[in-house]
Image (cartoon, rainbow, N blue to C red; front, side, top):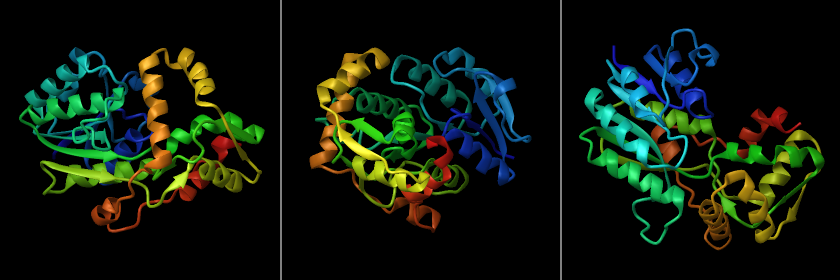
Length: 281
């Protein structure tokens, strides 16, 4: 039976990938930092490893046919070693990327440059590859949880509109491309089913949890000052703010790729919020 290695196996997306593969009866190996604390399905083999240390990944790749790769950060150095190791053992890879990193030559933000570089490494690795270029993650709105509990979310760019995607849909598309033929060399742009501004996202979360939550526009410079000590990289903070600002005048693209690949509509942001309501209470 084909063995599939899942990286980021305890994260928002990876955990769903592992579960869905295991439920399908497939042979799954999960790359985790601490196997004893991973709490994965019984049939899943948990193997210790860290993508930031490529030498620890090589043992986990032995005997593997396919790899699900979701990178935990933005330094490109370790990615070369991980992709090279994957090419020595596996035959195909599914990589979670971002919208158009290799197509938009004017976009020089750190996340875009990183995904562009990882895609380049994979393209030249000899592996059969599939890229999932994903819209904004619905799970990122969990960062507002503390503010939601207080009834006011203060953040910049309330009119920024995104097609947020449920992590289960990302996982389902990944599982589909890992377990069916015809996806080699394919690039799929996947998103949620509808656009919502950030202010609309906050109001909807409030409706789901049963309290009024209002949006309060925060000056971008004030947000920058708050994010700098948290993220520690001025270039990355500035790039993130530019990205959010861009969605005010150029909303994120809505695609029907999830429905085409899975035969069902993409899950809505309301569905996501209902499933995560307790996280905001």
